[in-house]
Image (cartoon, rainbow, N blue to C red):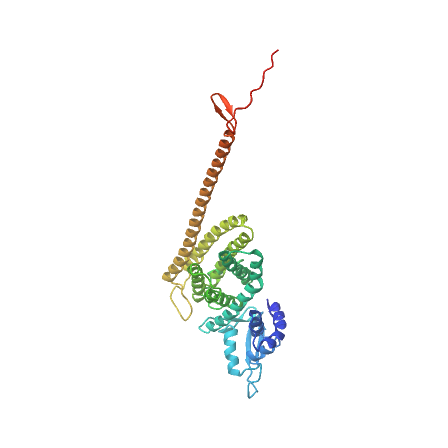
Length: 418
């Protein structure tokens, strides 16, 4: 990921100067923000002339165990602001938006490690990456989905659903791969008990905190996108439901220091939802594709069962056995019985509600299929009866003689006498 951002930032360095005067397209804005974000996160001020200005041309970083640590802030020697450079105070403000805050250095068996806490300054970082997400959303819509829509010639309602599924497929694919990478590198797969051991998990590694900040940025960006995409009024309540649910669960996991369990649950949820939206995309391309929906149905139920099992195992049993079960806001300990019950209730209620909606949809769909089959059988029986009546009406009997269709009797066959 680091190498990709560096290459993209180098490629975008020249268009930034060209578009800085008044670029209007999403790609132009992306070229301007990507070098800034990549240079600030990875400490590379040579990626673009604007990076040096935003980072203050004097912010130095060093890599400690594969993670970044801000080491020094050098004061500006310039007495005035020149093009591409900002004053030192502006640089500090820019870093507040670009780089995750509240980093501390701790000693471990592997040496010095940089860890992160959470605080109110994270809101500024979320706002910055929210803007980047809006730009990326526009780029995917303009250069990918709109081109596919022109070839498919979908109706207006299907076009809206296709765009929604296309955007969510990209996000779910990236987030599921990213979360799987974090889970594997943090060692949660080999030691499942680490999901609840040593709670509270107040110290986060850079990749964990950055993952949660970008998740919050994406789901907060989905709110203004309802206006930008001109979503129909009847579709807004449905989309607000799942946006609010995602924000509620991600914020709860982040603020209650349940980031490890939340990371695994997000991976399972994103994997299941990606299957659904992929199935819907293939259905819009070819309406005879129904097998992927059947496979997704099985995966959906399994995901709900695994989610409930994992929550009861981690929160209901794991945290209940912890020694320290007193509320301590300064230490970040929320392991109390009321909070555990509240967390379990919210998760169980959400999963039960999703299962209820799923089974209700499946039952209504089964009922519709049965009605269609009955209607087809009736239509087939009616057509068969009409064919039988038509075949019988070719000729009819009258006084023991067969009358032709025009009412005249057929000529009698002459019998030769011997």
